[in-house]
Length: 288
Image (cartoon, rainbow, N blue to C red):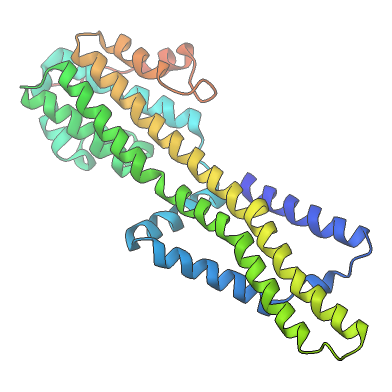
């Protein structure tokens, strides 16, 4: 929701300042100019972006507008989930998780954490990581290298929407100039007209440059930065999972492994040790 507030602040600041300076607000509303800039910018994105990334871009923008999930409770849940998985392994061995990691949606453990099950890539990441330990044959160090590689690949993919928006933002000032030039061409057709007529047409042409610059630096580039930040938060979530699984695979006790996972979380989102202790206190292994 803060994204919407920010967009409103930008709009009110620019339009309000223009009006306070005595500018006629109606002059800025030029549908044809908006059509040229908006349509051309959209077309360049479609040309340069594979279809699957267009879907990712739409989803990223929707998530930003709707607002982020409460991160604190999200991390408390995932730390508790890891602890519950680890205590079951400690009591019954890795084989006890075979059914859970094969079908997480039907797992009696995973089903307790709907906030985690709603993050499909994270579910697959954790389930596949634990399946390697269930099957055996992979050392903790090889597992860590494998998970690092998967996170790196996911980061490359998750960064695409932000890169698309950033490129779009870079093109908008140029498209504004194109629109302005077209407006000047039209104005030159009236070169034998009155000064007021020519001035009006030139003013309309300059609105195109204004639109391109405002859209780029007031809207699109900030949105690109926000999408990139959201992608980094999602990557940090995977680092949290990786840290816990790797620590446990190296022989750490369940709570110590969870502490490794907790320390991997960004400081401003990290649950306190007291919160984690309170959350995991009632967790016990299920009956075999």
